[in-house]
Length: 213
Image (cartoon, rainbow, N blue to C red):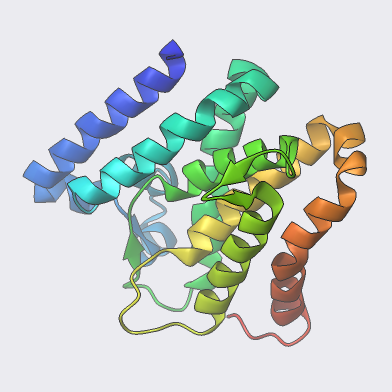
């Protein structure tokens, strides 16, 4: 395992465990709209990615990162991987902040934004060849984006997933891959386009129908 990936997983596990044991640390560093808006605690945009709700939440995020990070490390090298992971984490939370800007009590935690960015950057490298849950990468991406967009536009009381953070992170990873490998993106334009259709629909809802905000 790459030392950088190992360090991220270990640090995330340690900080998440501290958050489990010390509620005051959890409350101080979780993503919270009101704290960021009123008190300008922008560190929460990053620190929330190192906290998790429980061991299962932590396990699934780190397991997904463990499987897809090597592909991103191979394709984008260490610096590129770090840009994708932390850029996706921050952009995911920024998008979440925008989406819930009128709900100051909204809070969230988890590395899902960064993990989503790594996953989709990996998919962008090989949208046909890479398989996830027996589906071609681009089809999995389309379904992932579609479900997240639907749940974000039609929130359910029982749903506690941060779909806005997932979408923001995945978008960053996908766009970063396209910028770094434009020729590869052109070759796979059809598959990336299919994968991005739900994002186009979301943009229409945001900028034309003004459904969000």
